[in-house]
Amino acid sequence: MKAKLSLLCAALACSGAALAQGSSVALYGVMDVGISVDQGGAAGSATRVTSGMATQSRWGFRGAEELGGGLAAFFVIEGGIHADKGDSTQNNTLFGRTSIVGLRGKFGAVSVGLQDTPLFTVLNVVADPLRNGVIRSNNLMAPAGFRAANSVLYRSPVFDGFSTALMLAAGEAPGNAAAGRALGGSLDFSRGPLNASIAFHRKNNDSATVSGRGLARNLLLAANYQFAAFRGHAAYEVNRGPNSAPINNGAAVFGGAPPVPSTDSRDLLLAASIPLGASTVVLTCVHADDRTVHDQDATQLGVAYMYAFSKRTDVYTSYGGIRNRNGAVYTEGNSEEPGLGNRQFALGLRHRF
Image (cartoon, rainbow, N blue to C red):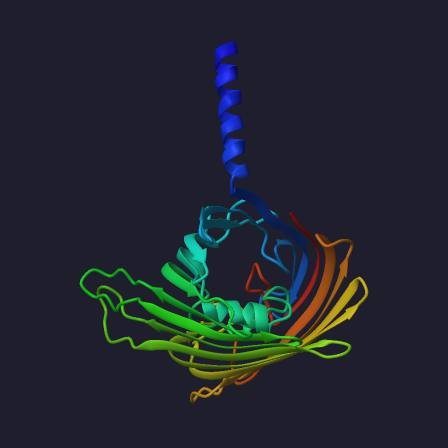
């Protein structure tokens, strides 16, 4: 027994020495749980304990190893958690949010696996001050690509404030390399009070057995600017083709037939984030303009308030509502769920670790 313990201690010591020589692994995550009240649906109001409204509850590991000459290997594996029930999100996958390995150096960074698309990153980081949490922008601005499996992503270094990202996601359909394939990218600028980006995403709708479905195309322009008393956000998105603007909730929440997504639409986001000491107030407006014959437009208005106890822990509350026109059926959701009606109140506690 003493010999086994000695061997174990020696192995742990060697492992610690290896990490000290330039390797690191960290556990991180977010636990976010609160109460949501949904109204406006055909089934009536619903009050629920809900996970991940402001930030989807998650856990993950990330690590890196310095390889010398400025080159490093890195990995990230991250999974979503239904904190109110304890099971996994993303169709009950273990690491359904991110699963990548890559290399970074003076040339930038290349990562391979399951990861956010450049367009979704711009929507979260540049356009939406609530980062698609409560009163999320993608209730109305739901592009064709949020995350891409089987993808290769390159991010350049920053040159005079400019950087770029380019992604290729393989469809992996036997006999048809184009089926299911996606291509996306962004051009980003950040200097002083200004952050601005233009991003695109194109996905082939064909499958291994069905062809001729066409392309889903999204183009997003986004910027935010720090004024004296607040940060202003603006974004404009153009969506064309089948599956270019999926409905955030495919159920017939308001009664009648299931919703039909637009194949030609424009989205506009305007928002302001106002810091007040430990508090932050966010005002947001999103408008979806359906250019098809159905003309099913919608406008979302909302306000959110957050109070930070520390850098890691805060409480939040929000209220958002959607006005649907001409039979549109957009629902008021949050980072975790699509919502059960056209209005939602949220109150929650969020802790980062």
